[in-house]
Image 1 (cartoon, rainbow, N blue to C red):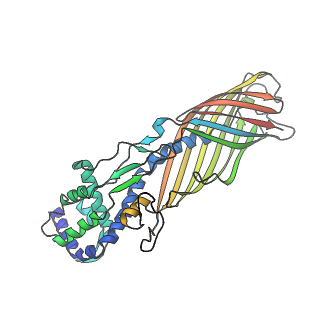
Image 2: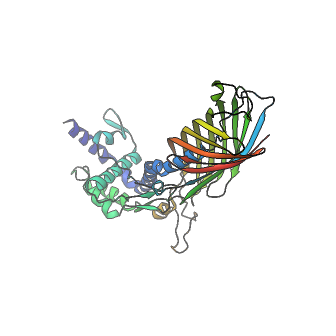
Image 3: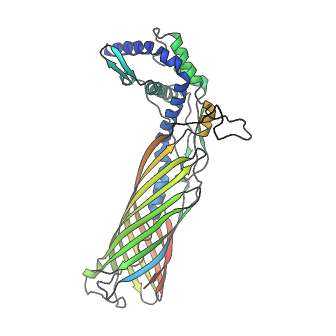
Length: 426
């Protein structure tokens, strides 16, 4: 009985909203396309970005150590200045994911949540929100019940390539509308049904999830300074000022600091001099890093602002074979959190379909507003937060040549990396 009464109230409200639908069908179509585009972006944004987070986590949280020995005390501070290089190979499983369609099953109570009543009178109707909700009902019915809307099996991540298309033919949408629980209610006038149908007929039939950068390898080089020693503790510093790395990446900045403390100094003799024979050395380390990325993305020049924080906690060992080579190994637990804010306009092909931009022709399409075609003037903002954690095993070797040293290692984790570098100690 309660559900029946709610349905009657909802139909009553739709009857009195008929004029609104008729007067603003075109603007509602644009608003619906804008909201659905955002729904599609946010529903697929995290799996699109997740492989990037895995790669950045594995790459940036690398090359913190190549020697576990730290003298307990020194006459004066020493400095190690070096360039740390990382090279990772992107596996195919990081290039694709299974996309999802934004949808919601019909619930009369949820539909009524878009309507504000004052007693028995209508105080306010979130008409755009209600239209969006009813449209998500059609998506749910088309994907899960009627199977008339097909979701692509896979889409490109930010590391993959190729665009993925979601096709929503008008005849399919109209067929789904006709089977909606409210559409067949005899109390709803045909004029209102026609207004809804006209809104759908003007809706874009094609939505695109854009592909990524098609990366097979990831390379990074980071300057690093280590300063020691105080009570067997070293300070690590990393810093890259904001620099423009080209159109594909944008403005990038990076910083980090960490502390490494000798554990082996507490066992047996205090080996103050590096020349003394030692069975092995052991140290613990904690590092905190941050990055910022700003860029203009796509032909609509959408704004991207991404901040990342990274943490690394490691235990590592080294063994010195005097005048020959040093070998080292370690285990790390690392984490990353990335918050990306996007301020974006409707994709250009949606603007063409809605008549916001005059495409002019397919051979030489237009991307700019022209008289009578103002383009999308209402940018939207979405914020995506993505995180990842990882266990990493590292094995490597180091060779000293006077004050210089070179080193190379291999890092085994969710994203395997070759790394190495050169440093100078003074």
